[in-house]
Image (cartoon, rainbow, N blue to C red; front, top):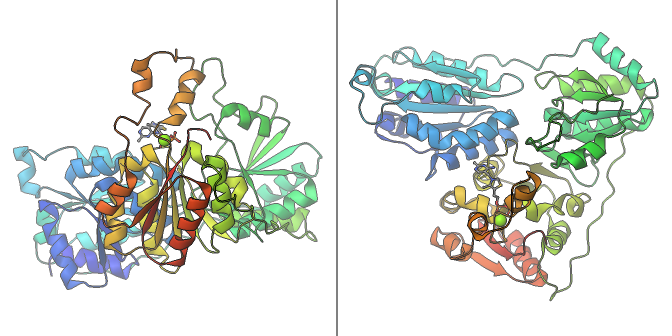
Length: 519
Ligand SMILES: Cc1ncc(C[n+]2csc(CCOP(=O)(O)OP(=O)(O)O)c2C)c(N)n1
Ligand SMILES: [Mg+2]
C-alpha cells in the first residue's frame, strides 16, 4: 500500500470521509487512491477558497472535520481567507496540502514556496510527513489535533514521494479529547458575583449558543436579572421558536457600547472580551465599559454548556428557560417593492423548520435577525472572521454534512463574486441549497465605512471603487451557466413565489433579489 492509500484509509477510520478538493500534479496519488477507498467522498471545488469554506461549513454542522485537499503553497494561499474564517469559528478542519517530492524541493521549481509559513498563519497544528511509512500516524494525529476542543485547523503537508512510496499502513483513530470541565470554585465565584445585584451581562460564544447552553443561560438570566448577549459573529447559533433567544452584540461599536453600557460585570462563557471590529479615529478599541469587571466562566475549549448548566443549578435551581414564542412576519403583499426589509419579511414568513442559514447578506441582512427570530428552529452560520466570500462555500459544506436539511444561503452580491464557483459544486453534487443573492450593485458597507473612518467621501474616483454597476452583474446568467436554475425577483411577491417554489423542491436553486442599498 502506498502512503496516499494508507493516509485515506486512516482518515476514513478516524471519521473523516469527505474531502473538498482542488488537486494538482503533486496530489495525483491522493486522487488515484480515492478509487481504492470508496468510503472517502471527494467533492470537486473549482477554487481553493470554495474548498476551504466548504470544509468550514461541514465542520460547523457535523462537529467533526472534513478534509480540504490543496495544491502546494499557491493552492493553500487561495484557500487562506476561508481558513481564516474557519479558525475564527474554531471549526475542526483538516487541510491536506500536497508538496513537491522531498528531493525535488532544493531545485526551487516554479511552484516551490514556503508552505509551512502559510500553513502556520491559520493552523493550530502543522506537520510535514517525512516518509510513506509515517503518513498514516501523522494523519491520525492531525485528525485528533483538529478535533481537540474547541476545534481548529490541522494542516498535513504531504510531499509527492511520501504519497507514492510503498510501505504505508493505516493506523487506528486516536482517542478524542473531551472539553475540559470548569472547576467548581470558578462556578461558585461567578455565582457569588451574580447574586450581588450589579448589572451583569453574560456574553455567550462558541458552544454556548447551541440549545443546551442557551437554555442554561436563560435560566441564569431569569433568576438573577443578568442580561444575555452573544458574539457578533457566532459560528453556529441555534435559534427560533422554542429556543431561548439571545441578541448578538452589534457590529457597529457605538451600538455595541449601548448594549453593554450599564454593565458593571461582564461574564464570558465561551466568548472573548469584545473589541471593535476596526479602529476609528477617537473611538476605543475595547468595547468593555471602563468601570466593568470581566470574569471568565468558561474558555472556548472548556465544557461551556456544562459550566452554564452547573451555574444555573446553583443560582436558578427552580427556574425554567424562557423559550422564544413562535411568531412569523406576515408576508408583504404581492406588488410591494423589494427592499432588504420586505425580503427579510418574506424569508421570516417562509423559513422552514430545520433550515441551515449561511448568512453573508451583509447590509441587506440587517432586518433578518428580527424577521426570523420566531421562525421554526434553525441554525444560523455567520461570517466569523470577516473575510468575505464565505457564504456560498459554507452552504456547500453544510449541505454535504446535513443531507436531510434545507440550506439557505443569504448572500450579498459583492461577497458572492469572490467564490461564485461554489454554485457549480452545488449543481454537481445536487445539493439542497437555495441561494438568495441580495444584488444592491454595490459594496454598500464600504460606502458607510468611508464616512465612519473620517475619509472624504466626495468624488467619483472613490465611488468607482465601491460601485458594482457598469456592467451590472447578472446572477441569473451566472447561476444557470453553472447548472443552477435561477430566477430574478423585483417585488416582494415575486420573491415569495420563487422562494416557495425553491423550498418545495430539493436541489440547488438561486434567486437574484434586486434591492437598493440599505433598503
Ligand atoms: C477577503 C476580504 N476582502 C475584502 C474585504 C473588504 N470588504 C468588506 S465588506 C466589502 C464589500 C461587501 O459588499 P457586498 O458583499 O456586496 O455587501 P454590501 O455591503 O453591499 O451589503 C469588502 C470588499 C473583506 N472584508 N474581506
Ligand atoms: Mg452589495
